[in-house]
Length: 102
Length: 135
Image 1 (tube, rainbow over the protein chains, first blue to last red):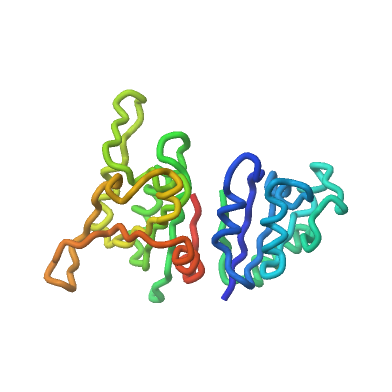
Image 2 (tube, rainbow over the protein chains, first blue to last red; image 1 turned 90 degrees about the horizontal axis):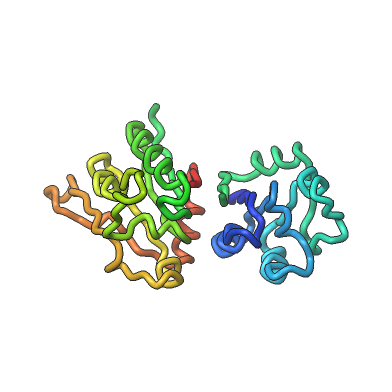
């Protein structure tokens, strides 16, 4: 039993990403979408917390949203991988529930 | 419709700055008609929804905080409030309104609907649902 968490807000605007990180369980997945993709960047104030979770939780950014914002793959944290829209659908299908962190 | 599913409504927003909190309550009341196993979670700024003494006379919007006290009549009796979120905001359970329900399995004894849980317990509650609806 596992959960797909989606985060659609910048971590610099709201506490949604941090709250998500604090409530997700080993084996869950986090997908950063829309402004949430900024949470996948290196060198930010939340980078350590995201990196720390990357071992036990699969972390993704939605590539079209990252591309739209000019976030090159080499600026993403190690262990944070891009998925396309089909990958988003697969993630939803592969988990028991989806929880949005608005 | 036979299988009862576990529904969790997650409340993470303060009550009047956005429409999320009111809309969540509306959806809970509508959903209550479907005889599912319903819980509400209050964390982050969502804990502000349950504070006592709300008075919206001056801002021209409905004070919906009394509506939480009606949830028991719709068999919505599990309001989980995260302790850490209260602590971070300088709140204690004394700052929250009393919400109760009458337990039909216990001679209609009046019992508290609000249950304060730790962040770890909240994570377990979230992981134990069939459907999570976020507001």
